[in-house]
Length: 150
Image: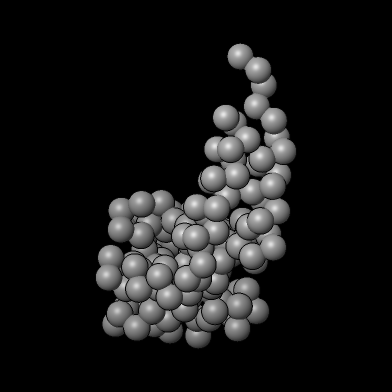
């Protein structure tokens, strides 16, 4: 079998980059919020808690915007805020209900960690609204990759 050329993948990455859909997340931020490595949304791992897309690309979700405004720091104000408007504080959702996590150690709770529009309805609305061109760009990139593999 002949090796698959990397050119189509590079082309797909270039298309996504031109459309502003390349990776924008910051993996180092995971350690800056309690249980940042345990966040789930609709039962699925969500590696980029501050983004509408689990991979960390695209627009920020309400928590990501609040985290950015807080200087990318876990502050008492950020902890006490309800960024997604669901009636639960960010701290409660991330396992730090008393806002005592200081960046080291284990949060008060390490299970059932969710954040930012974690309901199916809220998440779907954000995913559809923040980047209407994501699906089209992803389809285009997949076509470029498929054409190169053929």
